[in-house]
Length: 158
Image (cartoon, rainbow, N blue to C red; front, side):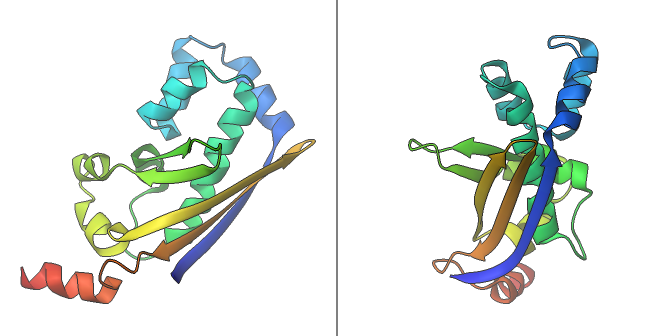
């Protein structure tokens, strides 16, 4: 496994609680807020979240950490990438980050997908204690796919 980038983010939970207190669930303002950085899957998951503030903070921190892991030349604006990826949990509750390639394509960033994300994955760790939540992301190459430079050469010659 080859590490391509790392990122981390720390969220102060009282700030999230205060923000959500100003945006009543179900209101247009709440929907606009969620639509700025949440994928449709996450917005659906928020409706059933036992602790909405922790859910929102976890999504935000994961995406901030992911963006830091991939930021650089050719990266789409953060908000575009945030809406194109989603945090989910597997059957054991372990968190992961997935990228919706179709969302990137619709936003006009398919080249970024092809050159920087295809054949890679994101390892995610989220932890919380008291007033803080932290997310750590490791962007890694999947050995079953060509290396990024090789993918770029294949794409250009196709």
